[in-house]
Figure 1 (tube, rainbow, N blue to C red):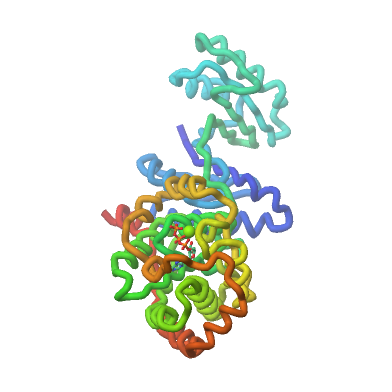
Figure 2: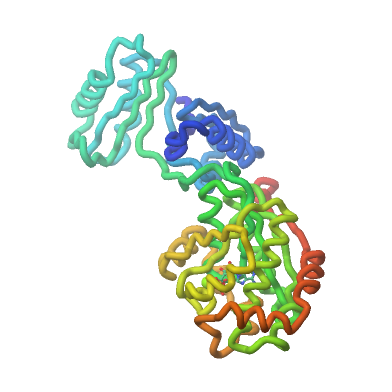
Length: 394
Ligand code: ATP
Ligand code: MG
């Protein structure tokens, strides 16, 4: 029997004015991700259909599970629009399944079809009850929801589907720069921003030789995980060594982190301009460490006018960890290699830093030219979801 993947957009459909743009972006994203597969993709305003080769189904499902903007998808059977064929097909599909309760739900867009939805549901329901033992209808909490879409010529029949990752299609928003460290929080922040359709480039600050190449590789591995949700992630690597050393030499120890983060934001702002990014995204979470108290955020944020999105600002660490596990970044994040923040951490970082104090301390060294020099030396690389590409080549 002919099968097709039927995709439901969910949240998209509420965006009335932008609907076409959203659907087209999703269509393009799905097409890109499935470019190595023999598929035919068609779309209308509320559904997308993918014709696929049976042997590819598991791999295609894995890819669809990482595409934002997909609310649900089902494997649907296509049959002629004819009540007997529909009845027989439903029975054929259900008789080998183990279930106790079910419900039939019909949508009829073929207005010339002789039966209305309210007539079709009981017809199919009673046919199943007659032919399969020990099952019952449950209209509130059915184990299996049998859905029938009656269309002119061909109809679609499907049961429980697969939950997609939701959100908006990547690219319906412009670009953000994600501050990506090797920790648990920032990959989660990146994932959550991408889920809103935001295109994300990552920026990593390193301080070699105080930080290791392993720490950088960790960040690259995290980008690979994030790239599963897009086609690629551009990673920009900032050599932060000189600035960190100057801070260490010139700034009171308790203000070290505060000043360091002000420098990071200044660099981020310049990079954002260079890379056409509109906002900064990071993994700050209120109160998690001294530099993330509201007083610290206020003083650190003062150096930039760019909006800073903090998707995990109000989440508990355990909630962040749950997401990290779900998106498979957790095991990489907990590897022990230190990033530049942890190397220079003072024993007693200031919890309520004062803006005037920051400004005074920053006058002690020529940070402006250091920042300019640092931005000029940023290294750029592009990271793809290698595993998927690799598997296909093999
Ligand atoms: P953890 O998950 O252990 O909290 P973290 O990476 O979140 O680690 P924080 O010190 O809490 O570390 O830093 C707050 C945020 O600042 C990070 O989530 C990240 O967005 C950004 N950040 C910190 N260090 C770096 C770095 N070396 N490169 C890029 N961004 C960084
Ligand atoms: Mg953190």
